[in-house]
Length: 498
Image (cartoon, rainbow, N blue to C red; front, side, top):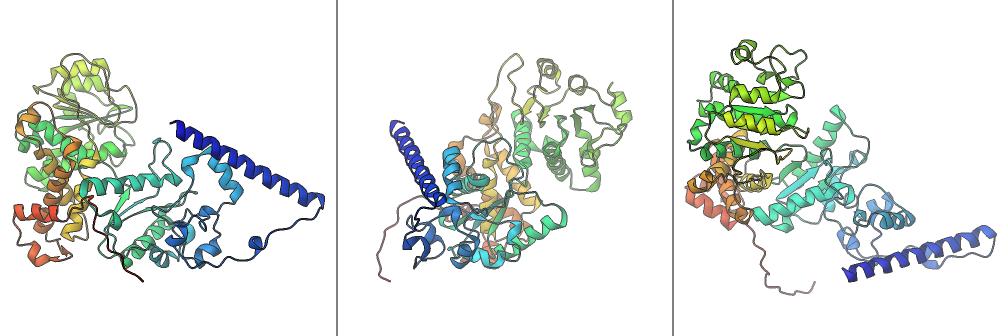
């Protein structure tokens, strides 16, 4: 810590000295005294490097101070944040926000200003083989702190997890970020995304693209719900019988409900009748109380889960009933919290849950964890999407599927729910320890590949063509996954002259 503080003091002193020198030069020029610049100031410097080689060289790397003309001339477009800064602005930014400085490229940057150029821009990245891309438009970076230049740390962090958990080779990953400006929407937004995707798949036809912060974590929640069935001493096939009260009818909450409803319908035969029947297992409460068909102006996404008026009357409930009333009357197996509003799971609500018909009712405070309530405190689980997305990405990559189907996502969630032993789930443990992340990723990836094969989506990966992939049994699929997971081991290095 002492060394770091000393370095920062030295950096501050250097910055002040540089600024002082700039003010002195400016004063001399204004006064009319003789001013001059060195020949290096006006004469172009000849370099024998381009692209990343320039950015990796501290003698020539100007970071965000490269003009757009220089970026095009040196194949730097897309390798730097899209804004151009002066050296004075860079100094000021360093003083205010050290972590915001761009020092070396860890991803690429695309913006609406790059329309028409994206096809050529992707070739500025030096790697001919890229397996995994994480792209974000920054639209859901919510209060997570200083994440570096325009939030690219979000995409980089997810790729780090792909490397650590899924064994994706770090030399074959790439993060992308959009420009921080007035947000595009509608057809204009779609046009930019379409051009980006066309450019990416033209250069890397088999790459997997994850749209980070465009999506939700409904499958991890679903795995938890399935695990809760097992924790209550019931087989997973009993999931369609679960009574679930949901606090929150926003996009995140409805996303979880849709995934759970599809799973219930699938277990009931995957018919339209089964899908309609599954809706009756959910009671959704938003800021205005229980949602029923009597409510005016129901959000279209929440409408499928609005309770029928006669049903609610038989249960002693009405439109807009409070959460505590709903819990008292429904006696749910699961209380699922997916609201941005804090304090919903009050002491009264948790006391009401004691009347559940389940011997071990489950509480999922997924947005706002609570410390309220009395009685025995069971195992506290963390519903983290890192238990699923590395395996989904790896499995999709190794299967060669061009899409990630609902069935593949479903298989991943069911695999995670079934991963824990009977002894563990009876202790209330429904998510694995992070120390087992490589193993659970292997299992999830194998489940995703198996589902891709069953849906006839698998096309193979590298030496494993589709014909050979379809011949593999379950153990062989697991071995195939393990053999394609990168491990951080030092390779033997061999020097060769140019």
